[in-house]
Image (cartoon, rainbow, N blue to C red; front, side, top):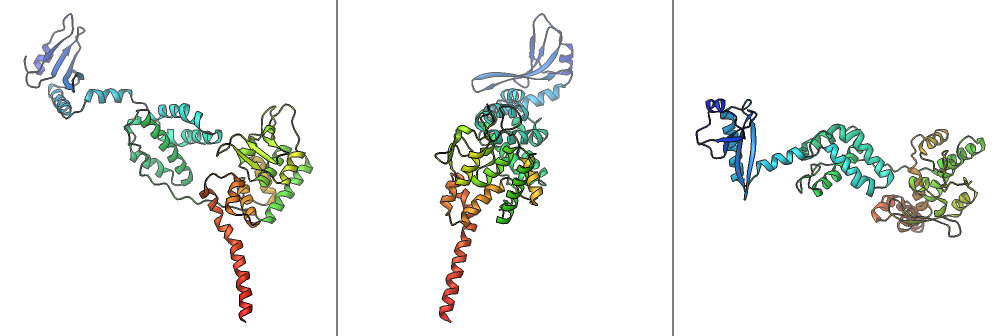
Length: 384
């Protein structure tokens, strides 16, 4: 068994079957000669009880010295308990972030998320995450990669934070599916950007103006009656936009004065209705063959997008900064002004967490402060 040299490699002749010339200095290093005449360096070692063989490269590319150095590294790694061949195979079969996203969509987004949330996840993946990280192997994505991605979106901090949530969930599942080692989520320890929570409440005067605009539009007969009804129901019920837009007549219980929603952001829930909301539903037109309360222009479908209509409403009402979701906040603030406590407001809004309703605590303090002023002024008169 000779020491492999350039001369031995060059003069090795092909035979009818492949054969090996093993190096005398480094056990496990060899030259494989195929019947075709192709020659390549290999290294053989033991990983636990298994014998493993790796191809180092063709003799036309690697020199004897390079092959020897590479073989020494691999044999040393194997003696330290590693398996370089297995690591190489895992690298070859590793999926890209784009492929992971496809599995994430099929196994999580499409099954576990509500339609509106699913649309937002897919939008974040399509517009932001995949263009930046899609080509990388799942095993190669580092915290530095994710931190840079997050930093590059610092001009849109809210969007950056939502993308970070998608990445976190996607890589948690990658670990569960065995595509990354446990505890290696690259999103870990990356802090979100501060977000300013918008707490816009329409005043009584602003609400009156919205009501006037809706009546004007109704009289003009240009806008969809169902769009006008949708805004009125949002104001009168405090429901989320999706709950009203996907409301079916089957869910409307006029005698019970309630909407019985089989599904919502927080699961099945009952929305108790005041008399004004009941009157709106009693007067609402129904489209034959259409199960939706807020029907659209396509036969059998509900209205898919209320935003264009709301933009026209707020433009005419002079409320350029008011969002549709602010109508829900306004419902809560009106309840506070009417003297309702936070637990009752939470029930009206369908909150499952006390912390969610707690955002209105500062409004609930206003009547208390007013009462304190009255008591203090009365006491002051008594003191003289």
